[in-house]
Image (cartoon, rainbow, N blue to C red; front, top):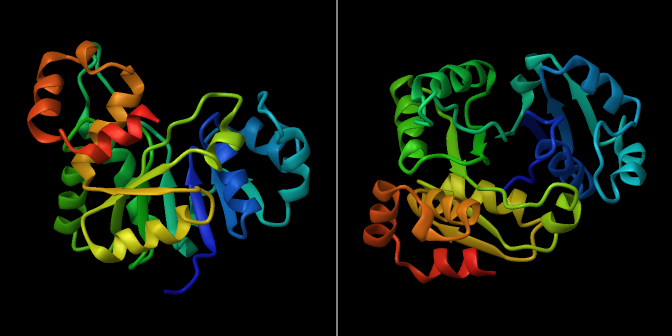
Length: 237
C-alpha cells in the first residue's frame, strides 16, 4: 500500500487535535490542522502553544512550517489522503445525540474530500453512528472510506500517551482498515482491530470507567452485543 503522506486533522487546534497532529507530523507525515479558531491558528503557525501540553513547547517549533501547519481554509481537504475528525457528536438539551447536526458537519467535509480518501472519526460516537455515516456517504455515491479509531488520552499528557497506549482501529472494509492500520501503526505500540460498533462501545467504556453507570439502553447493548475480550482488554489497560 502507498504510504500515506497528506493528513488533515479537523478540529486540529484543540486539546485533542493539536497533540495528535504533532505526533503524526513527528512520525513522517505531512499534517494540516484545520480549525475555525483564527487566533489559535495564527499562534500555532508562529510556534506558540495555545494551551499546556507536556513536551509540546519544544516539539511544536521543530515541526511547524515543515511537516505541520494550521489553517482555517477547508481547501486543504482537497489533497488529503486521510481526514481525521476529532469533533464529537453534538447533543441536544436532553443530551441526546443530534445526528442531523453531525451529518451537516460531515457533509461539509465530504464535499471537499477526494475519491478514495479515508475519513477517520476519533471522538465519542453513540453506538451505530459510524454505520449511519457510512450509509450516508454511500447514498451520496462517494468513494470515501470510513474508520472509527477512538482517542483515549488525558489532557496535558497526550503526546506521551499517543505513543505508549494501545490504539483501537475499526472499519467496515479491508481497504479502510488497511489505511487506518498504516497511519496508526506508525505511532501506537499496539493496534486492536475491532468492528465499529465494538469500538464505539469501547470508547463509551473508557469515558465512563464503569459500565454500571452508563444509561440503561447503552448498558443493555453493551452486555448483549460486546462481551468480547477485545473491548474489555482495551478498556482495562
